[in-house]
Length: 278
Image (cartoon, rainbow, N blue to C red; front, side, top):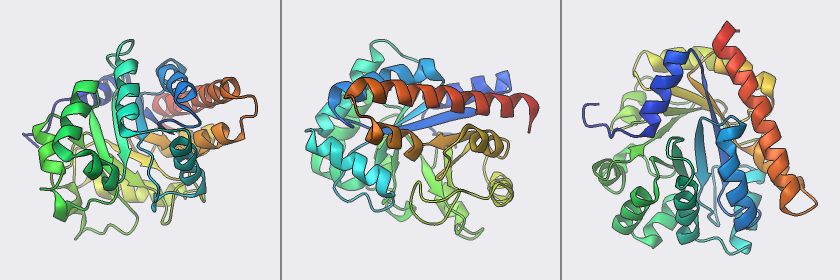
């Protein structure tokens, strides 16, 4: 769209396209398992290979998420995470990294409680590039999507296997940054996507939009990331990273090391997909 905000997201996907690479999009929940560990994980993700970072805004009722991310929200909230602290994490990240896009992902309630105008102003000032608000449909664009665009933030939509050709144009209205294709029906992290079905669906979506399409939900291994990356412009991995945080036993160090190690392996899989098209 002509009025699409120009953010780090567009710059990143254009650069990756020039380089013949696909994007690795990583998700973590802000403040999981605690603020310090979460900040260290966030700060190290670009060097580990993340091209775009989704930072989850903890919420008490994350209805679209599977058990792993639900528990991540619970851990973060128990540790005292707030919207103010989440935005402060982005601000601190920007002190060292002014190029990697950050997308805040979550539900409308925490934004509404914080206050829409205040949230958009503070998010932009902190260095946020885009929003994914999973429970705000296109019919509610005046609530947050249009004000976000006016504030210079991308508003990223989700499409699913049940988003048919009649519904898709509505989903794409006012969408910007990239389109997040949910590769399975159901909640996050519960089963693996079928690569052939995903490729067919992404090809169909691309007939309707020039936005990059990133594929998520159920991607856990470097091989899956490599396979799915060939179908779209990027792959989103969340639950597999969050699971590492949940399993860490020695406080923060193991969580930081484990998330970054898996990110490096996933990035290599995605890079190979971009090079050889397989």
